[in-house]
Length: 206
Ligand code: ATP
Image (cartoon, rainbow, N blue to C red; front, side, top):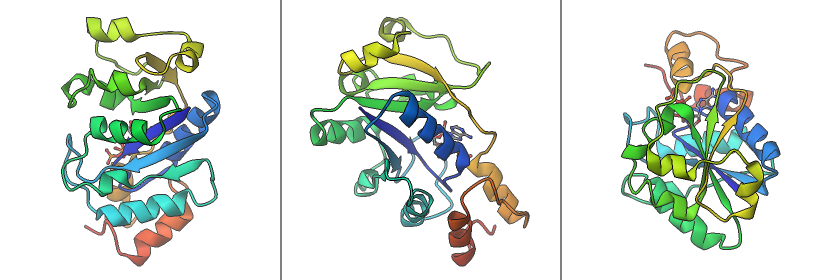
């Protein structure tokens, strides 16, 4: 099974890295693919270029061989649609089951995503939650997809919705960008190699 962890990663931080590691272990994955989006469809433009975000991802994961940085969304000129990404992954790994990881905040918007129902033809959807996270009620389509049985994710190729509680560290990229503007030290919220890159390239200064 392959885990798909997408995001803006502006910049990548330990909240992302810790959850990717836990998910990798919990689901005994072959690897996790970290996929930065080119132009997020659902939010403001990133503060950095796509290449800078990609470089930071590579620096953050350089010693973690089961994390693969995947730049396929940066190859496309149009907006980043998860449906398109999963379609190409499904074609590239026809023998593998794909697990699409979505944070509970993003999942609350899920039914506004392009071809959200069709995503279940290509992957299982795993929503990562924290204790007491506020989730919108599920519609009937999603209720029918829901399973509490982790084994069914291995036994079926796609089509299930699963909620997985993980350690979510209280770190956000927004907070890190704000600290840099305020000239506070973000150390221990993200890898030193990423901080060095931010400093060298004078990112997030204003
Ligand atoms: P921003 O503050 O700019 O919105 P972010 O820190 O939330 O950024 P994203 O790149 O938007 O990071 O997030 C990518 C994915 O990582 C999303 O699924 C999001 O739910 C998840 N995520 C973000 N922060 C954390 C965290 N601290 N712990 C676990 N998952 C996280």
